Image (cartoon, rainbow, N blue to C red):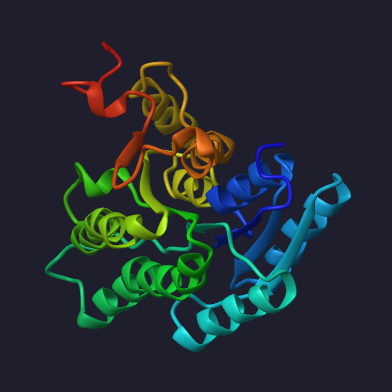
Length: 260
């Protein structure tokens, strides 16, 4: 119960990686703030945590709106008086060829995936500085480190998150606040399942994806949650300004094929 009594905000925690992170923190005793846009999904995560004996509060939050972010943070302070951990998970994925992408596409992804991380961190860190302690974990992507064709906007946003993480760690370090980024690869989420179903040979594609990984399996949201727990915990007190890749060894391969 490393986080007993700690207040942990997890954005985008209604489903997928965010939900997995929220459940891991709740299992360690944290009071988890489910800061997500989807009301039904947010309430479901809140109910699940409470049913299993944990503590959670859903606050409907749009990370694309500074007013919404400010309101969420102020409500957390009003109710609990502190914020110990922020996990910036909320984001969107959009892959589109550069020559077909529009300015609207760019603005949409950057607004959520990069600007949203900045604003959530800014408004949360305002209170962490007063406490002289805190941890921020930004969920980035392996696309920030190595990417594919037709992912320019998403890759740019996530690379921006990594760069911002390093600068934030330096800016906030004197106030006892650590900032790190997690870069997941393939993760078993509803988005991943939806992507598989777009292909007529979903089972075959999934097998190929699994063979890309050293252990022949992809990450689960809980895998990402466990790393977030560690980075936010006192066990990682000397880790800040880093980006940690969690992709099951996929990036270690020279060639991604079943031969490996």
